[in-house]
Length: 179
Image 1 (cartoon, rainbow, N blue to C red):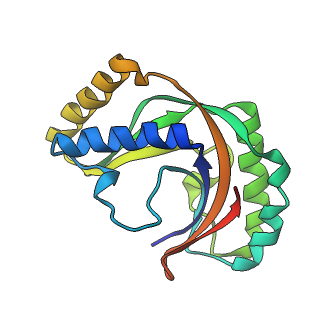
Image 2: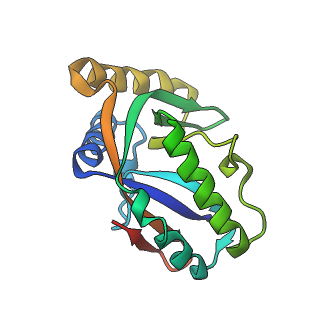
């Protein structure tokens, strides 16, 4: 499992994403609500790699002054493949892209192996995952659930990024760095 550095959302936005998880779960569809780890929460992965050294923590804490950061949780997004992932796009503002690049650069000396290609600046798609491993027959109904929620007021969500954490899957611990 990949080590990662992730942004965390404010309480209202966190609750909005969790409500989408709940709606998918209630419909019998794949959902992040099924992940029972106490560290499971809505987040935006900035960088993933085979291993990230804890020595990066101080360098990342140095970015504390860039928080909170406004963002918009936008349209549903599907990552393809044999088992698809459903997410909500985090609209990539200039400020968010600058923060991503700063974090990426600070992490590079502390990685074992290269960062995963989708983490590189210019290749990163900021998103909040709603569910994973959707089959072809499930993704349409899942989009319908998300669209019904949007019609009920969960269209674009004005959000704030309030935290930063480093996820260590080997120890199953998240290290809160900002927030």
